[in-house]
Image (cartoon, rainbow, N blue to C red; front, side, top):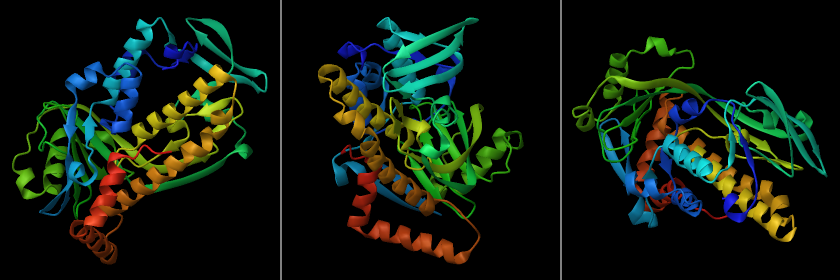
Length: 370
């Protein structure tokens, strides 16, 4: 997007291209994210290969209820893997002759001042230095960008959840044409997909679980046990392509800008994966920062740069609330009967109340308003 406005940039990536394009990540795109990719000129393959979902299913035991997103909001969601988004962006970047350096090691922010910024790194055995106007810290939760800011300059808000998600990717047809969120006495389960022939499934697990303890057969047996009978009967199983355990946390750092350094995506915020807000929040950050940089380079004004953090955080906290709420609604936190009864009452209200269903649908599809 910056290239289209004649703004030069350099991308530093620690890992290899093969590793980056092979990682299995999110796969549900809000319409605002799809629009952003179209604006960047990288949505041609997405339009050809993606799936469109008009709703999703909530399940409690053997009871199922479909949330009709399109009927409630006029919008659906798009299924297209983050890995594929990355491939499209890389192809466009390299096709435009853009500077993208894989295996950039020892990246360090050496200077942040009113005059500019300076970054050093090693690549192909040689040391390099970049002098730039701004730094976009898009390097994730464990990246160097946020660690370059003095701890006293930021406020951290964090909540760790007492469970994880065990996810498995398999070359099997999805059990349903739309996503299924299952609240079960054994724990949460999610049925998702990456295509009409590739499925992505998740089951709630403990923080102590280890991936080597979960054979493919154990995973399929546990998933089947947590699904309503009608879906469990038609579940197609097969060998896993990829399997992993992710810890679940809510995390926000304020502010998201520090002079000429701007945090984007997971470098600034992590949401629980229920509701699929992580990738879409990162895309929303990109949109805001792009607008701000275009304003600066076209007019010299810093209005949108100065407002970046407050505008981004307003959206972040809305998504944080929704992801926290959906996690509370669908996951097993304890064996306490009272807590489970509250979940059932909330789900019953959601099913019976058009207003509650509308609120869920609006948050799920994502309202791209700043």
